[in-house]
Image (tube, rainbow, N blue to C red; front, side):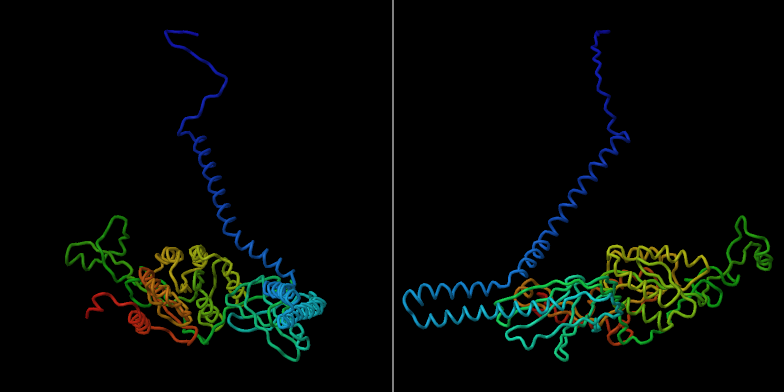
Length: 483
């Protein structure tokens, strides 16, 4: 229809929403979320693909009785017999070929017989529960015959899930299993991979076994034994302190302001100076009667968790205390605190310190508390959350960092890493510890570094000595070389 020189075209299609409407924004957000999920799924699939392929290849290899070396020896021996032993009547290769074939055959036979014997004894027993500590070998109650009477055969096994290190101890013709965990946590059920193989590596069979064994792994206390009393101060009126709360006696003075009660006016000063001033409480502290302790999870937090356990069990937190950890709420008994330590192992390092603020708020509903935070020995995302939680509680907090000794960082330089493998570091990184201490300096809290290996409190002088030793062992600069 033509009206006033314009063409009016009507369509049954609904009008599109404006570009800034909520509908368009929701559609864009949904599309972005779908794209992000698809990309995340693809990354997870690619990251898990090598591990899945490796597990599948191992499972297939466990079902094949001959190893790659066994196949190679059998193939070479057969080729030598066919082409040289019988083809050219080479007696030396004839004897060697039959000897190699016989060795492979005997190894295969003995491995199959031993695997059948082991298979008959791989029966799931009743569910057992074991309490163990990190770094300590604990018997699990599982054992198998050592098969010492079977020639050319040896027996070994490992844990597939959970992948904890184990030790096999030979006692009275049997191999007894001992687990030595490296990190606290709780594990329900064990899957073992039992390997029966010959001493030459020609034949091998792998068997799997599921055991309803449950483990509770606690952090060990090392040589800490007993920590010093970890009591800080809370707002009060016992000792004047600039970092305390204004809750002391009214001995401070300031100018009178609107709304100040007249009963706090200092009239004698007004009579002398004709100025109105009022008495206000001084900033003071007093020893808190309740202690709220919290374990922050992160990288290198195992020694700190051990220190937290010692503090709870030895009474270093006082008589009235509450303990919390990432992934667990507040607890008031030793057994509950141990469970909180175990559950904290499931919290990812990226979420360390997420529950600290809520825990302190809940505890402060019953009055002021002395705050003790057990923190990791390496910086991480937990530092920002801890600083935010302790910012309003300055002067009444203590931070305890546990280490298993201090070790200097390996010297830098790509050529050093290329030519020589750096030795395994024994202890916490001195550089990472100093970085964490520098980041925590703004909290204005007393920081205590305890060594679980020696049971000592490491002061600043000891840490500086380790750093100086690290600098001396590191690569020299051009100026140092010229000097």
